[in-house]
Length: 140
Image (cartoon, rainbow, N blue to C red; front, side):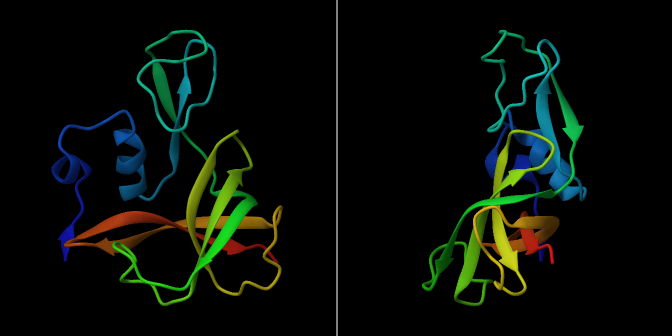
């Protein structure tokens, strides 16, 4: 299996490059403006709140609540590695006003809007690369 390299796969790193690099290292890092403290996702080069170009990438916990979810019963590009059906969840993170998407692992029992989840960083196959991916599990 070829190791995923964000720079190799996509060309020059975009504003979100540090996000992918952190996931590859097993951590979730998100951008916060050093000028005003605003969190940004998707990542931006310049803060829309204060105009600063200076951001720091801060490690955050993979915990949150389900904002939305959907169950997929058919295959499409990039999902070949998943058993079907699979459930995708959009999670509102606990520590920051950011939402991230990933696949639900384990039982769907108790799945509802507002349900607490914990996440982990995994890899999934996309074409010839293993890329970082978020996996979420309901908190009992």
